[in-house]
Amino acid sequence: MLIFFGILIVVACVLLGFFVLVQNPKGGGLSGSFGGFGNQVMGVRQTTDVLEKGTWILASAIAILCLTSAMFVNKGAGSVEKGKSTIEQSAGAPAPAPAAPSNTAPLPQPTPPAKTN
Picture (cartoon, rainbow, N blue to C red):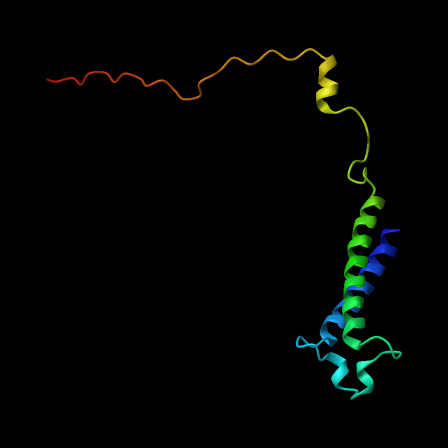
């Protein structure tokens, strides 16, 4: 199911990139390249309005697909076995006695006085 959502997200991202790149930042876009006919799509909508609405629809579709795909992620994919944790396992057994602190540094040895003759 995640592969299906991944493919849909990639397709929506490619289409969104196409919609954004086709638009002219000054509002011209495709409408200027078709002369007078480019101002209307199917006689009612302008090209810039269609591209703007398509951009918003694709952006919201990507967001919804990303949030929905998170619901299908396997929560226990990282753990192999669902056993007791180490804290739960050691709770029943007595705790080992703490080891006595040991100094690993040797104590300084006094030097014998030098002999003078």
